[in-house]
Amino acid sequence: MSEELGLLPANELLTLLASKTISSVELLEHLLRRNDALGSQLNAIITFDIDHALATARAIDNARANGESLGKLAGLPMTVKDALAVKGVRSTGGAVELKNHVPNEDADVVSNVRNAGAVVFGKTNLPRWSGDIQATNEIFGTTNNPWDLSRGPGGSSGGASAALAAGLTALEIGTDIGGSIRLPAHFAGVCGHKPSYGVVSQRGYIDHVSYGHGDADVNVVGPLARCVDDLELLFDVLVEPSTRPDQPLRLTLPAPRNDARKMRVAAWINDKNCPISTGVTGVLEAALSAIRADGISVDETARPDVKFEDVHTVGLPLISAATSPGRTDEEFEALQEIIKNKSSEDPTLVMRASASTVIHRDWLLLAETRDKNRRKWWNFFKSWDVLLAPVAITAAFPHQTEGNLYTRTLDVDGGERPYADLIVWTSQFGYVYLPSTVVPVGNTKEGLPIGIQVVGPYLGDRTTIEFAKYIEQLLGGYKVPPLAKIK
Image (cartoon, rainbow, N blue to C red; front, top):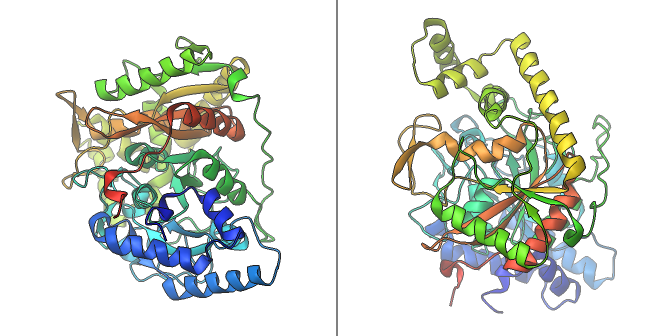
């Protein structure tokens, strides 16, 4: 069996399974061998459920041999971010409070992939409560980027992106509140889709100790994969309505607005409020040039009637408020102290403290401004089908262990930038609930992958996926990291 089998697209693996060229057990064992070879270097898959996965794979192989009807993911081994509950498997959210937590039921999306025949064999690494741009926590340690082990694969779905890039899993389910699907896809050179808010169930999302009883604002659950066709394959499974009697109705997504080559394309590739590095700029400008050379017009002047700075005064505060249940009592009291005694002059920390301790009246006013901006984006997408934008200000960065999201800094083009700038371009579209598909478009001179966001109107998920397919076909998409070429 070729050692590159695990690097094939999920759709190709499903074809091999359906034709009985390989069995589900053989494919699972192959991926486990790849993890044996690379796992210690990457630390991407941190919990395994091998016995149950092998039993499931054997059952599907037997059902296939008997000619039984099977689901669209039948026999495909895959992993799940450790921010999602998996029945009978340790599921921690990256928090020490849940280090021995074993759920008694699956998250809705896990139920969906199981019902479609997927073989869930492990959980992937993340930061505590999915709250960082690196995949590291006190329980499992740090995940490395297969393109450069001294750098991270992004966060919070960093274990997911590293496992995919290295061919340790066929598909992954991640979560995204400030860019946690899109940033890892960009940093590790894979594909990711942040769905429109509300179209995929969040039930079973682990973002605080008493998780699972409501939906976090802004947050979504979505697919990661090595190619866009695979994103679409998994997305179609994830959007299936839950069979639970208390599950609200799911929203119906329209078909793509048009063929990709006929779409009206705008681009917002840089902004003085959050400039991107020269290395990222060069790759994105080359991508736009290639799209234009292929006959598609791209307007770089079109903008919504939304102030870029609103991401700082509205978007990031709403995200901080949404993640506040994960604060410990001590952390929450410290944030209250900052506001009460004005004990910090750091504007980012003051924003975080204000948002995490916000009174309901002020939250409603923030949400009202968000709704006004959503209307402005809706008006923008009357004239444009997709908007192309950066994912992050830089490529994958070296591991940082000191400080936190609000205190760290990055060296970008020789200058010091706030670490939190990494989530500005993703939060810009996330807090207004827009769908965004990330696809690789090239590599920097240092060999690090760069992705681009394809953003669309609310519920325009199939439109962004369609244009991402076009970009992938034009520019090549996912490339295999040298580390993953096992001999």
